[in-house]
Length: 117
Image (cartoon, rainbow, N blue to C red; front, side, top):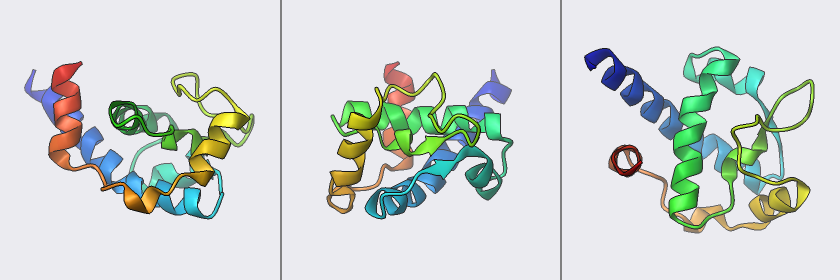
């Protein structure tokens, strides 16, 4: 149980590290590859699912576009199956949204999402 809580806390912190990077990418209408951003937070490509999942749930809770849709696979050019974005129309919404008007999530915000799940 303790190990699970520690893993969850690491995932939350990694999600917080990714938020400004995703906001910057949205502002500049850029997609990001899993393989490029995973090393920035110290995980393998597949280790991004939990941190991005927290951010996706944050976006859902605030009724924001899915900022996590910007992270795609180099091979397919698409987000993973776990991303709730539904294609190019959702990307346009992410690119056009004024993300600098949205306060970045806090540690408490993401932990609260986990408790409400």
